[in-house]
Structure formats: structure tokens, C-alpha cells
Length: 426
RNA sequence: GGAAGGGUGGCUGAGCGGUUGAAAGCACCAGUCUUGAAAACUGGCGAGGGUUUACGCCCUCCGUGGGUUCAAAUCCCACCUCUUCCGCCA
Image (cartoon, rainbow, N blue to C red; front, side, top):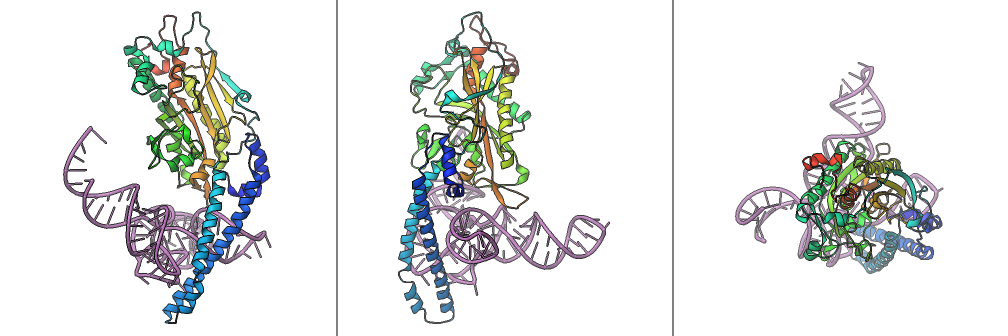
């Protein structure tokens, strides 16, 4: 959520900036509500003040043994006036909050202006896509190899549950697990992150904190509507919310956390997209990196975290490119996002494998996640940064397709062999 | 699942329905003392919001949500959560 004060004082500027996102801010409605809010709030607080003062004098009079009836007569009816004022204020505030919660974050100045994903800008590229002297298969075809030994099985998964799930067997499942282990090891040993294990079910407060609610409920799987429990769409939610309602000490910063979790997404609205294979699943594994930092470190942290994600691809020797999302494509809560796209020979295309974002204080304000600045002694909002490091399912796909051999086998990248008991190929 | 007891400021921990936003201690900050530090002493020190050019003034907040009352941290109801004991169990 944006700073309400900023919206109040720089409304036209905010509206202007949001246009880059194709977001139309209803300036008139906001102004009207804001005026009403001010009026209601002042009125309500005055009434409260009156009630407090009079109640106190009643207390005093009573203690002094005086007759309090005249005073009681004075406050008669005050309660109802107060209740009415409160109700109106609550109503206005609620409308205001609803609008505020629906306003996306302001973009960083370095974000290129653009309409949609076609306007994203590539900023660097690493590795050469391999040239094949045989016809390349995609990961689905490669996964058909000897199912119970090392296969991917989509049919069984759809029997068990439905579309967009997968069953993995044998060495394939092990390779998948090896990737998780490998990523966590790199981030904890080389990049300075602390590993955390978190719940895979979160409450609606947490989802509001990171910005999935109230706007994007249809993307989530709800486990219990009654109590408001949802499966996490990303570890970002539980990990970032660790700081919700907390005031961290300066010595704890930057707080760098990494976590492996499954992720659950309903993928509503993606009918027909990536229906083949395991590119887009309802359930997938991801290793996530989260950094909680002071505002002055935020942009540096985003650059650093993005390189941490890229490091995994480099170690796996998978060609990729890094792009910066244009203003029309940046996610709701993010101020700036880099996507890392891995080369998939089966699709002859670069496909997203990581998304690294800086949310400035947008999430922190929603969840009141703060740190104490020793220079002022006052709590300040944290800045939150996160990114995938990496999406495990898609990394598996990338390995299968990039490391495939003419005979349909797949070589295991060097760095993963220690995790695979030395096995060199599938 | 049963029983009992808790949830109060950054932390620990008092709190009779009425000058309690909340004792005390710790931590923290400033000052005195000291060659310096520690100790001791003195003072300051919650968060969010509104309003004001500003000093300031005001409102809200004692797990959450309701209720009673002129007035609620304090009384009532519901819920959440933690601890201990019993039972069950991966």
C-alpha cells in the first residue's frame, strides 16, 4: 500500500505515475472521500474528547461526594451522536481503504515505460544456446523414457488429481530433489542466506501483507473459507510475513532468508497456456530468496539478489537472459522487477525461471514490518525484496532439454552429481 | 479431545470500573562523576493516526471481535493464541 499521506498531498503526481502502469486512479473520488474523511474524523474525535472530559469530571464529582445527576443529564444523547459519527467515519474509511489497497506500487525511475511484455527490455545475456546435430525433444518427450526408472508421468497425475500436475519417478524425482538441495546449499553457503522452513498454509492477513489479497484471490487455492486459510502461491508470503508487526533491530539487517516450499496456484485465466508439460503447474517447488533491508539498501539488494539467482543458472551452465519488466508488465506490489529467462531448446525460446522484485515499503506498510533506526531511535518501514532462486520444476525442464543427448538420455550437470550419488546421466 | 492458568510498551512485569498511556525493573539515549571505561546518580524514553507554518493540542491502542456503562486494561460473551497436566497419536 502506498503512503496515505503521499496520496493526500501529491495526488495528481501519484496518478500521473500510475498511468505508466495503465492504472487509472480515480482522483475525483479519492478527493471527495478524503474530504469527507477529514471532516468525519475531526468531528468524531471532538465528540470523543468531549465524552472523555465529561466522564472524567463525573468521576471527580463522584469522588468528591457531589450530586452527579446534572452532569449525567449533560452527556445524555452524546453517546448516540458519537455512535453515528463513528459509523460514518468507519464507512468512509472503509471505502478509502478499499481504494488504497487496490492501488499498485509506484515504479522505480529506471523501469522502462511500455504497454505489455513485448516492451520488456533485455539487459544481459549469459551462455550460448547449444546447437544440436539431432532433432531436439522437449522435456515431455524426454520424460517418457522408462517411466518407473526416471520418468515424468502426467497421465497418472491427472488421474490422481487433474490437469497441471505431475508424477515423477526414480532418478527424475531424485534429480528434482537434488536441485532443491543444491540451490539451498549455494544460497546458504555462498550468498549468506539463512534457511527457513515455513507453513505452506497461511491466513488472509499474511496474504494481505504481501499483496495477494484482496485483489488476486482467484489465483489462490483456499483450503478453508471459514477460517481464511490458503495454500501459499510462493514462499514469499510466509517468509516475508515473518516480519509482520515486528520491529527489527538494526543489527539484524539485512535479513536474508531462503526457503524451499511447494507453491500452489490456481492458474485461473491461463487456460490454453502451456498446457503441455510441467511449465505451468498447480503445484511446483521453488527455492525463494527474501531480503528485508533498510530503504537506502533496497536497490542494491535487488541487484545482488538477482545475481544470486543468476549464479544458480551459471553453475548449472544453463544459458539465460535477464530482462527488466516494463511499466505495463510489473506486478502489483513491485516497484521494479527483473525476470530471468532460461533457454529451452524444446521451445526455441527463453522462458521465465525467476522473477526478482523490489517492493520498496509497499508490502512493509501493509504488514507494519519495521526496523529501529538507531540514528533517530524511531521505527521505520522495512523494504522487502524477493526472487526465485529458482523455480525448481522449470529448472528441471531446462536441464532435460539443454542436456539431452542424441540417444534420448540426459547428462547430469557436474554440480549436481554429488547430489546424485555420482550418476552421470539419466 | 479433557482440565487449569496466561496473553499489558523493545523485553520482564504490576495494575481497586473513574487524574492509568498505564507502577517497577531491564534495555536504550542524554547529562554528572571518571584520564578513559564500568559502576553510581540525575533526567529522558511506546506505537499508530488527526490537526497545526510551528510550539502544541487531540484521538486510538493493554491478544481479536462484540456487549454493559456517563466512563472499561479492569465487568460480560464469543473467538484466536500460548503454557502446564491428562489422554491420544505421526
